[in-house]
Amino acid sequence: MASLTTHSETIPEGMLAELTPTLFTDSDTQSLQKALADDGYLYLPGVLNAEDVLDARRAIFTELAAVGEIAEPPMEGISTHTSKRAELIEDMEAHWKSLSENGQLRDVTHGERMDEVLSKVLGGEVKPFDFLWLRATHPGRASAFHFDHVYMNRGTQNLLTVWTPLGDVALDEGPITLLEGSHQWDDLIDDFNGFDVDTDQSRPGHVTVEPVTMAKKRNTRLLTTTFSAGDILIMPMFMLHGSLDNRSAVHRVRLSCDVRYQLAAEPFDPRWMGDDPIGHGQGYASMGGAKPATSDPLFR
Image 1 (cartoon, rainbow, N blue to C red):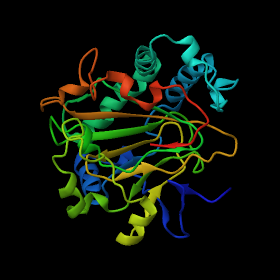
Image 2 (tube, rainbow, N blue to C red; image 1 turned 135 degrees about the vertical axis):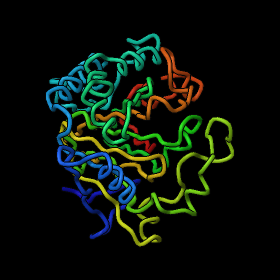
Image 3 (cartoon, rainbow, N blue to C red; image 1 turned 90 degrees about the vertical axis):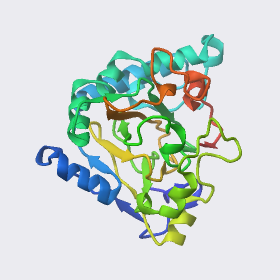
Image 4 (cartoon, rainbow, N blue to C red; image 1 turned 120 degrees about the vertical axis):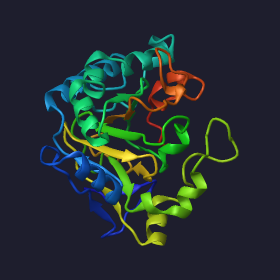
């Protein structure tokens, strides 16, 4: 395997470490909340039904194959580095909204099992955001490192991100990656706390120091793992995360999604709720996935 990178920086030996797994069946709410507070995340391997996850993967990649972005057979998720979406799809937002609301995908992200898991983690009746962040990350791309707070801070602050790989994800396919201990970096948290990307355009919502450089300065590590269908990763709003670069040798697209869960009784950020959530003002059109995929490297 080629050297692993994030934002084109090669990750030095010893800087990349494995996420610590938590066995959900052996945990209660108190132990789950303690692990979340101590580590800044919960990595729950195999907590979802893998076949349900793979059904969602098949449904999404079949649709992307229909617009020429995924090669046959779609289940393999191999990028064609081309797209016919602009020729075949009249409304890009409606197309991505339809994919994000696919019934098999929602059975995973908004289904009974996810509800059961998050109810146990949060200790009460829960409800997810209606908006779903579906990501098809092609080779040459990565996600910028950021705190989720800046994008969804108009409701409860006791909000959790649930990252779900829709299929297995190898290290060279750009899995989600955390900066270890960043949930306790008060100086950086204070800088972003209360910042709202929709009302303040003076700076980006992500950190501008590249992750390897930041890890060196903070004497910490990058945390990730090889994910399998059925795994999930849960984080609070102040855990710095992004991804490794997708440098898949076989040109496989990393398919994943994010959904936000909270206690049902607490206030919701209205941007992400309802039949047509406005999001950042353009609904699903604001998602990178709503745009046709190309072979051009684009780290975002």
